[in-house]
Length: 225
Image (cartoon, rainbow, N blue to C red; front, side):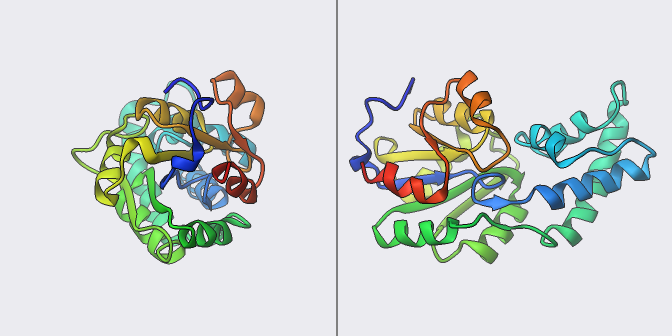
């Protein structure tokens, strides 16, 4: 799938959502937990705007971006469980669905769409967050787990479509980052890039994205073309 221009959106029956930055605003809690670990190691902390660029490929990658250059690998490995311990306690302090997302999901569900969430977060966290916020509308939630390659590999998307009983030709991917766009391309799916998440439009255009939603409500318009 090179672009979305030849896609008949009327054929779409299945939506594969990214989680962080797409349906769920997790950035403040992620920032606070990473900064907590950095402070424990007497390392400089970072701002929300910096963390927008750090996240998208999982927590280890975010830590690698956050620590000072030259930090030994074993230190980063040591920091991972400390982050998880803090984040498990504080992951819902500020995290919530983006404004309008739940109403859009409700409308899409009522229109007959099947929906899944795929994320590079740990699988247990993805399932817990889905159960708390989206389970009325999203039937399948898949995160990082043994035996399944992380995004941008297509494995999670393929598994989600299999569990939903969905065909590739009837599915679309919605995300906010370059990892999501590449995941869609690797999965041979059209992609809608949302602009309320962790990346801005200019960045997404540079990596090849060409179908955008400025607000959740615009997703309805795109999918009803």
